[in-house]
Amino acid sequence: MAPAALLALVIAAGCRSTGSTSLLRGKQPPVRRVVCLFDQKPWLNADAAGDRDPEGIRYRVFLDTDKGKGVLRDGTFHVEMYCIKRESGKEVQRELVSDWHYPTSRFGTVTAKILGDGYLLQLRWATKDVAGNEVELITSYESPDGRAVRAATTRKRVPKYVS
Image 1: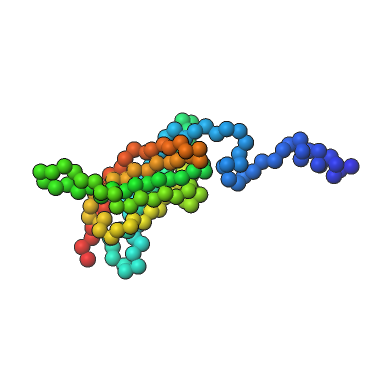
Image 2: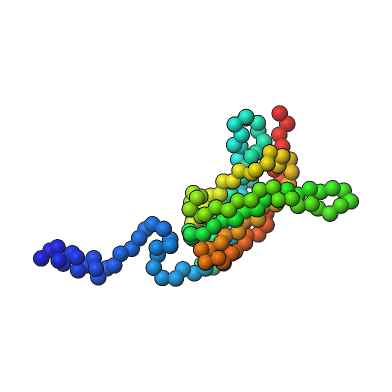
């Protein structure tokens, strides 16, 4: 009699998954805002040669559904990095030097008491001549249904060390 009662309880309670967010029941509210938080020194040194100039950047990204807390979602992060060149007497020049397109599942997650759940992006740029320049980062999130939300543009000065 006990196995039959247990089976009836399982059927009545249903199944819930703690895995991928795509398996959750019901419609999830859409992401309305992308918030990027950078440390004071967000630079990655990933050079096997051992010079001190950074070869990448690390920052946290929170997806907000207007609830005030970050959520984890399936989807894709798109990040564009432009090198900013200022020449006297001319307009500012923006040159795309790296772009990344990765699923959210590729990145580690973080939890912040106030901001909720988010992602830790660690990106390595394609060219070696970024150090010493100002860069502009544009981060956006694209949901599986194609809806894109963009964060505020961020500008940073990449350090250049004299060896």
